[in-house]
Structure formats: C-alpha cells, structure tokens
Amino acid sequence: MLNMRRREFLQLSVLASGASFCKVFGFETSPANSLRLTIDPNDTGYTIAPDFTGLSYETQQLGDPTFFAPDNTELVDFVRRLGKQGILRIGGNSSEYSFWTPHPTAADLAAASEPVNPSTGKHPDAVRKITPKAIDNLRGFIDATGWKLIYGLNLGKGTPEASAEEAAYVAKTMGSKLVAFQLGNEPNLFVLANLRQKGYSFADYAQEWQKFHKAVVARVPNAKFAGPDTSYAKPWMQGFADEFKDEIILLTQHYYALGPPTDPRMTIERLLTPRPKFVKALEAMEQLHKDSGLPYRMSETNSCYSAGKQGVSNTLASAFWGAELMYQLAAAGSSGINFHGGGYGWYTPIAGTRAKGFEARPIYYGMLLFDQAGAGQLVKNTLDQPQPEDTVVAYSLKTDTGLKTVVLNKDGSKSLRLSIDPGQRAERARVLMLTGPSLDATSGVKLGGSEVRKHADWEAAKQPTIAAKDGKFTLELPAASGCLLTYS
Image 1 (cartoon, one colour):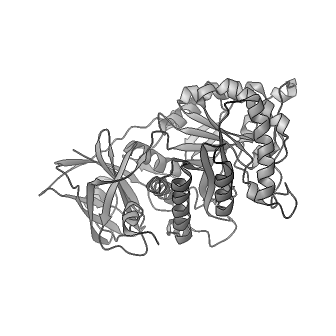
Image 2 (image 1 turned 45 degrees about the vertical axis):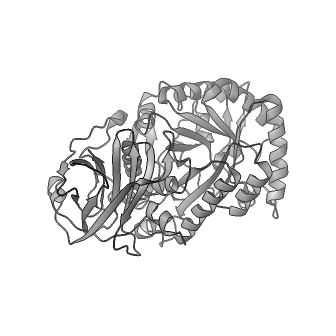
C-alpha cells in the first residue's frame, strides 16, 4: 500500500455535487455530493518537466517519408499544441520489421498511401524500408514542433551492423534533438511475437543488447541509450538497470490499462477504476529510480492494447484516464509519458492522415488540459471522505504563473460540490472546464467551451471566475467533467 504522503499526491476519491457550472456549460443538474479539498503549497513533491508530454508512433510510419515532415503543417500544429517542448518516440512492434535502406530505389521512396495504425501485435507487421529522406524529413518535423526524439532500432530481426549504420545517420541528422536510442521493442514478449524461440530470457536479451550497443557505439561514440522498453516486466527492468546502469541514461517501459479489446469486460468502468497492481508497479519504478539514480519514462502507453477498443478508447472517459495517468506518473517521479497512436487507431490522440487531415480524439483533450496546467512542482492536496471508488481525483502544483489545481470528476451520474482551501492568500480562481455529453461520448468534447479544430486551432471560449469567501472557494462541477483552477 502507498503511505499516506504518497497517497495524497496520487489519486484520492470523493463523492460529487454542484449546479452553477452545470448551467454555465449547458448541463442539467444531477444528484450531488460535497467534498473538501485542502492544499498545502509548502509540502512539495516531484517536479513536472516541460518535456513531460510525449507521443509514440510506429517505426513503420517512417516508410512514408512525407508524414513526419516539416511541411505536414497540420500534424506539426497538433503536436505543438500539446506543448512547446515534448518527446516523440519512434518504435512499436513494427520497429522489428522496419529496415534501414541507405540506397533506396524509386519504389522505396514512394510514400505509403494507407494510414499506419498502431500495431495490434497479432501478426507480423508489413516490412517497411527506412530511408535517409525519411530521417531528413523527421529532423525538419522535430525542429518545427520544438520537440525531441527517442529512436528505436531493430533488434528483433535486424543486425548490429545495420543498426549501427542507421544509428550513425540518425545521430548525425538529429544532433542535439536526439534524446536516446532504444534497442528492441518489448523484448520480454519476443517469444509471443515469434521473434525468438521458447525459453528466450533476459540473459539472452542482455547478450544481444551488448552486441548491438557495442556496434552502435563504435560508429557513434557519444550515443545515448534508453531501455529496456519492456511491457510491464519488473524483473527485466531491474536486471537491465543493474547490468547496464553505466551505459544508459533513461529507463523505459510500457503500460496498457486494458486488453484485449475483444474481451467484453474491457469497459469504461474498468478503465476508470483504480488498479492496485499498477499502483504497486509505480512504487517499484519509483524505488528503482531512487536506487539506480536513473530517470524513468513510460515510453509507450494507452488505454487498451491492440490499437484500442471502440466505445472505450475513443470516448470522453479516455480523456479523464489519460490526464489522471499523467499526474499519477508525475507524482511517482516519472520523467514523462508517451501516448501511442497513429492512423485511425481507436486510442490515438491525433487521428487521420496527411491526405484527409487530422482531428483530436477525446484523449487529446486530457493531454491538452495537462499542458494548460503546465510544468511545475506538485504539492500536497488532500480530499476528505475518501471512497474506494476513486470517482474524483485532484492534483495541485506550483508553476511559474502561480498555484493551480486539476480536478477530475469521473462519476458519470453525480455532479460535484467542492470546497477548496488553497493554503495561501487568493481572491479568485479562473476555471477551465473539460466537458462532454457523457462518459461514453466520442464527439462533443470541449475544453474551455471550445473544440480543437483543424490545425489544432483552439482557444478557450469560457473561463468563468469564482471568488473566494473567507479564504475558500466553492467549485461546482457537472458529472463527467474536469477542470483546471488557476488561483490569483
């Protein structure tokens, strides 16, 4: 179990209540409950870095050199809207079926016409050839967004020599924009993916990793590495940190809350229900971070593996789940998160293609809410009357622009009346609301009363202000809504 200090930084539950914001945002009043939130700005936790937010795409997407390109301005705008800084991770299952091709033919340079959805992992991915043009354009894309890059190399079906040659070109092209290389995607699942024979172990992987690492360093002496990029495997993470502590700069792992999507038990209710195993995994990662001195990042994650589940991964509920996960990780000391996506996968934050245009899926709004709160230092906040359902969570942080609080009411039927003691002098609080028709809504999601439009055009249309009374604020939220409060 988490101790109380950590529990207060992580999710805490409540019941719900309220009416005034229901009227402001056009929602009907629902049954309500009340709760108190007490903030202690002097009791600080971990700091959220400016590049905490990230996206993850399949390496296969580089088979179309025009996708990650500076003149794909709409995608650039959607990425940049999520933060002036961030990290793009290129990897996924398809990284093991993507091959460096330094001397491409005309056919190799032809752009793939079909969208590259997240890999389902159910069968081998289509082979794609990665060309110098794709990497050149990727550098332009990275420059246009202001983000940096984690780049996965093919360990599953590749060779040390080919990976070294690819790494040399990537390192030369990306320069300081390259955070680290990764060798292999989810190697702990290589047997299930038919990439290795039964019995393949961490010791086997470690030997292979050393060969690839040695080859890359021979070509790129200053190369930096992250890993093991495993799927939720504590023994592999611990073994990797112990064996390669001096060769890596970042520990990475993956996490999916649900799966498989064909299982009828994978529902919105289950997505929003706290998971004790995940909380324990976070505790373990935090301890590994402290013991090893290495930062850690959730380099691939989303709501339901195998590209998501329709009616769950593409709903308003995913926005609450995504925003909460970002703060859970931040509160446990993680350096960041990369939401996996691409094409028209059900869970992708940005859906679409260059030819047809892009749109924001609901989870994008949860990420945007996180961005609007900004980087800063988490501080202790306590919700009274905690309930095991954890239907409401709150996180507070000190930023360059002042004290802020994010509140998520995940209850789909009850509104929330919240009394807030900010723990410091404040006369008013500006409220940015995250709303939608219902938890299962796939459209109509808004932040600040506005939808994210073409080219990520977004500006809050409504930011009501509430005044303090006797040093405290009363916030009223509809069911299935969230908000960002900025105190002044």
